[in-house]
Length: 117
Image 1 (cartoon, helix red, strand yellow):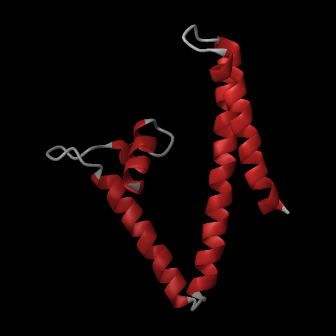
Image 2 (tube, rainbow, N blue to C red; image 1 turned 90 degrees about the horizontal axis):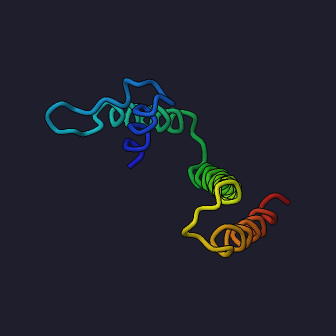
């Protein structure tokens, strides 16, 4: 699944465009998949050779990635709110444009706040 994200970032030229090239015959993101696999193998080798406690590393990475994910949700909610206020699509109501995004932002902020302490 990560290879598909890397592939799309390559297609959009956020990462090197080479990663956005699909296989001629199969249409699969083969270069992105190989790149992700090699990076994961290197990461695993580093963890194995440094003899770190796997439970500690797993907990730290899970916490860091979880915090980052909620932070990305907050930024996405803010962007939706700004977009809806600027463009006011005709097929939306006040609920869609303002109330729901503000409630979502409040809920996400309440979720992130204890993790920040």
